[in-house]
Image (spheres, rainbow, N blue to C red):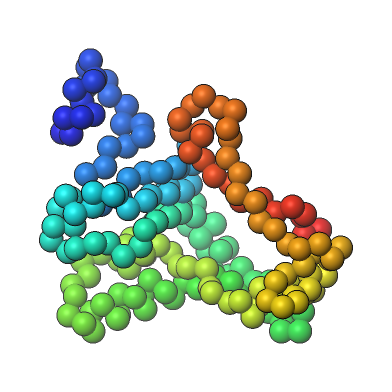
Length: 184
């Protein structure tokens, strides 16, 4: 048990672990109280963790885990398609990624003792900037000199906001992305 956490706890049996205590190279930065996502950041002292000592510095600074819900919702996500003007039907979610990663790892001699979906999730959103560009243009956005402009001609800005009014440390650490204008 981490001394710095539990030395301040009167009754360890009633300790809620909220937020969770991490012994790994990442610490929980934020999470959805409903249990749909968890956002982790690499610890500054990652080298003191067992993973850091054995494998070295974890590459990603941030890790986001998302729970996509019941099997019914997962099946819907796997078959989800959008109509892209000038392109046709497009499936933005790729459910083949976990198996492809597992196949790649096995070819390099790694043993995979779990279902790939249990390690890498049910799939990943595709990186498709060409499709994103077609969708933005279809709703009136314009791109000039490498910058995007809203349909009204104003520069498209994405603002990162946080709740500064809350006294809760959990709430003050939350970030949300909001664009200045809805795409409607």
